[in-house]
Length: 358
Ligand code: SF4
Image (cartoon, rainbow, N blue to C red; front, side, top):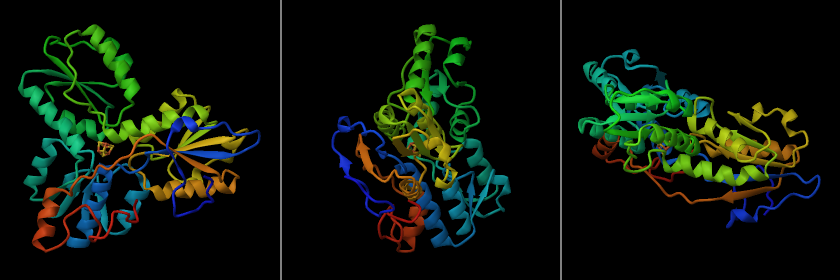
């Protein structure tokens, strides 16, 4: 179905992504990937800060960006959240929220020493990887963590078992890494990597280290995988793919790479619609649109409105999966909300989940 944007309703859902048709000469259209945007871990983390601000009042400190999205961080800052790089910047005894990317045990210890009231908004799927790292290190495994150096999630996971973990970032490093123990060896990964590149890295490692064991379940999370599958469907039919997401959002950056690897002629990541360069539209009939797991859908609507101004007003949604994952709010917050007789589910003001940062 064709829609005129901006619109509150979403475009028609295609039941079968194989229905994607080629546009006629000169026809302009948009293929809108789905799933896209907010995942359950981001939704929970953002609502946790919103509910903390409502319940305790401003300021609420947040260690690191609660999720890697400029718009979300700016909006929460305006409401009274104070984002800091580390816990030593938080006044003694104040309340601090840990971001969705997770923290190492050392950060928890420092927060305890400073008597901080902590709300841990670490995504449960990141916590799962932390637990795996602790468990396998205790069992005497050497662990290869596939991930990106300097990413907060990787820092947190490595902090769980620093002596046992070796970080491998890509296939090139897999070809050259030297390990002391190659007999009892397992690999884990960051949750937001490219599935294809990770498997390439692991295949190289397995050739070199035949005893390498797989993690008990996928560490690359459902949301990362689903967004990559959707953009792979869209990319072959797109002259240009636009990914809404911030530069420090790992899964958003991966979506650009995946789009280019799977047939998009051109692809760009933008934080906001205003960053679109009209030069990109030269000779372009079909534009694929998607967004990273930390991006409110309003930013995608803003982009669709801008594309409509350039003649790309026909929008077809290409859906490859349905998502219904919801994580409950952090335990500490739920306890305080319950004691105050307030709604403790993952809802804003007990109303619905369609809040204004979505
Ligand atoms: Fe959790 Fe995955 Fe979302 Fe990260 S991208 S917050 S791991 S659901």
